[in-house]
Amino acid sequence: MLARLRNRTAILVLALTVLSAVLITLLWRIRIGDSAMLYVGVPYLIAAALLVFTLNPREPGLAPTYGWLVRTSLWIFFSTSLVLQEGFLCVLFFIPIYLLVITVVYWLIRWVRSARSRERRLRACLLPVLLLLASVEGVTPSLTMPTHAVVAATRVVSLAPGEIRANLANQTSVDASSNPVLALFPMPYAVETGDLRVGAIHRVHYRYHRWFFTNTHEGTTILRITESDPTRIAAELVSDTSYLAKYLAVHELVLEMTPRADGRTAVTITVDFDRKLSPAWYFGPLEAYAVRRMAGHLIQEVLTDG
Image 1: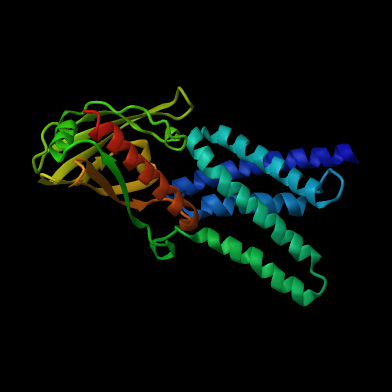
Image 2: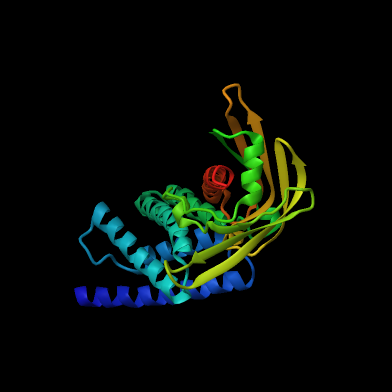
């Protein structure tokens, strides 16, 4: 009996791996691979299929059943990632929301099964349906939550505005970040700046190893200076082929320098961008945090190390 259950589970895991790979490929082909259909809908279907069509091969109980579900779901997740050759950044982005959806589905189905009356069971069934409906966010513009965001980071540096401008004009490289979150993101390694006149073009070069040290993606962000005053510089995005362009669309960068009474300068970088990934409740705070930390890193590495 146990061998039969294991075989049944193995077959379902294989089938769900193939199905999820096909679904994800299809979502990207029809240009909704950045919607909640991928990040909520696919985990939902995997968890529901495992709980509905497979008997838990372990002893009955809350902890063993949930543990089995998580392990089996993760096996499907990593197998699908290997089939699709996803980069490790995409995998790390996906894991938290994947596990969250798996957990929510587990409790919802458990609640439905534990409802004693038919009326309560019908009401409980509405919750899994609502969760599935949440996966349509981002599928069309009308079903997309607001994507626009403005994020700012401020650092106080021991330089005058003129020195900061000189550093920016002469910058050629950017050191790697020691922040554990930023270390996961594609960071610029070289900068082509030149003068800071209005209309000047600046290029930021990125190199991202999708598989730690191989499967490299090269890209460049091109910026045009739109405003250049002694204490304020603004630049608009002309084009972006960096790996980060998959996750967000930057519109404008603004650098403001405010001299302080102690001789130092408060430097603020403001980033105006649109989030590309849904759902908003997950990727909104995540991208805002990453952009804010990246802006702070650029203040330290680009503006103070000329």
